Length: 193
Image (cartoon, rainbow, N blue to C red; front, side, top):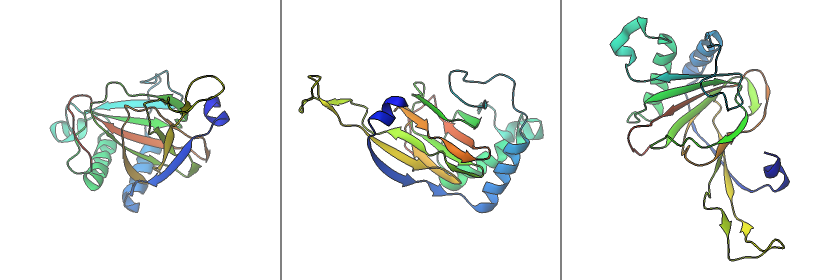
């Protein structure tokens, strides 16, 4: 992150598809009630809590005995609203995730992402030019100039599609707790809307 601040890149700002206010309110309330596990599902990333909900057996198969039943119902409603054909193998749910540039190497397709809470900032940033250096120009170090640009995606109360196989991270935010939900697929290729 410090390197990015020293040499900021061109930014392309975009916003996801706004979710219905009632769904936002219900999801936020459910996330505030969530009993988080003591151990993070991805300890290498900076977040207060990180939970992965496998999608092997759906809510329909288990009924109300399903872990996080209400949260899963609301997550299903969000996907049905934003991208009904999207298939996912798991859902990552985080609380106060920030920074942590990373690549989701096991992803097989794009993912869907939303964030919730009463915060400002916290945009999702995605490196748009993973090819690296433009060798046609020169610099004092003898190499080319960095030509990366970053998509700065507003996900607050919106659903966005992104490719987690590119470097991505979350900007700092102010306010209360920031929750995020990521639907991803590690089994089959697909295109999102």
